[in-house]
Length: 267
Image 1 (cartoon, one colour):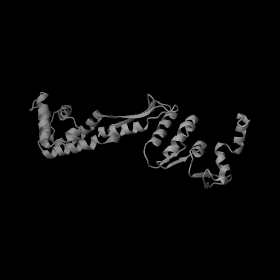
Image 2: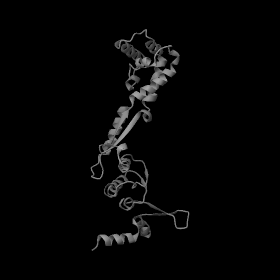
Image 3: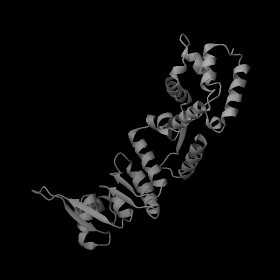
Image 4: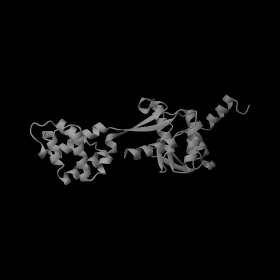
């Protein structure tokens, strides 16, 4: 399973190779908490086979003998005979005396083939429990996401969502906490490219996403004064009948006139 996860994360990181000055490198790694996994596995093992316990025997010693064979995928592929042969060889190699109670507990348990099957099922149960024992780490630039600013984390998440997958994507106010330059100089073009592969739905107040992102369908939601109900207007960029409503995203027609005069666009 770790090999499969490595392959998938490698593919994701490849898709996230970005050449843009507005975005730092985004990549992901993973860690499998093997010691925690073995601890939980042993707890269930020792509880399940508690009737084999010999009074006065240290469970830590039993655990040491049990894990002479690391509980990995390779062990799952061993039949009962191979499993027992490897275990006995390790017991002799490590110099454990067969007469020790903690060794006897393990050998007595695995003298039954069905107990070997039960143990291997326990291994499968926990070894493949990704949510419990595998931790995915994300990085923005050289910093782990948890050490980044909230805006940087938002950037990494939104870019990752857009760059990976083909299923419909719904994001509420993607512009929140993002740099305006990032939106205008990178995300808008990314959206125009990725919307050819998947449906992208934004709830936004940012005109860059709506207008420059070439939205196919726009739903304008308004609550008129002295009214508790929301009015819905479905339109498109080309529909001039609703042009003034779209202009409100940037403060209305007057705001454009003021900007034109202030920046001397046509002077």
